[in-house]
Image (cartoon, rainbow, N blue to C red; front, side, top):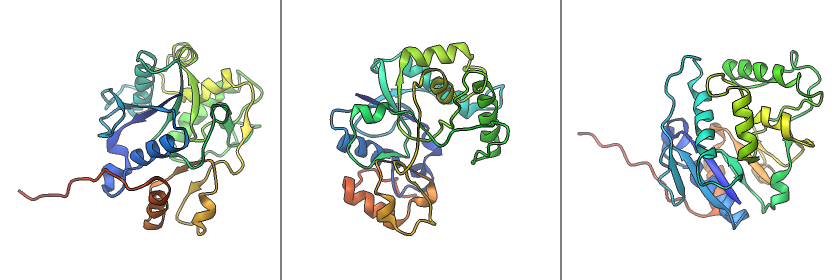
Length: 248
């Protein structure tokens, strides 16, 4: 199975802090828990032992959503590449904590089922909420079974189906959440998340319990010394270190 990370280094914790490389540990977690994985990074140079496909970042865009258009640009790169037709989409802050099978990865998860898109409260930034609302107002016209599919978990995708979504909604110029549109069209069944995922925050006290999951994604303030030690215990020492600052 091919696992694909889309990577914009300046937005990573590693670029901002230099003390812990979440991308390296995401890849480590896949190699340990899905040993036959073929690992690809699309975007900026990861500086790691993986297949790398360089894709220049979108810095500005008439839509004023360059980050979202940049994701679509990377999807186009994946579609046109040697990456397998079926692949698992990853991000640098997603980890496999336990061994998984292909069947596990094919499950489509949702945060919850949504009865009313207009009244559903979606977290994160104002710009993201607006993008989410725009996308899901379209989705409610596609299917009656609407879920919040943006779980930030591994996503099993097929290149041909992804291309259909990008083309149909003109995503290259029209900022939308393509992965949600993909699930709305192609998910035969959606499973509501229970304890398969842990969103770790500093408010979590029992870190051992937080690690008792299959999948994990994190936020920057999760990356404490205790968390890093636990990840080292599971996946070994890191090899990526940001060079020390030198005055000239």
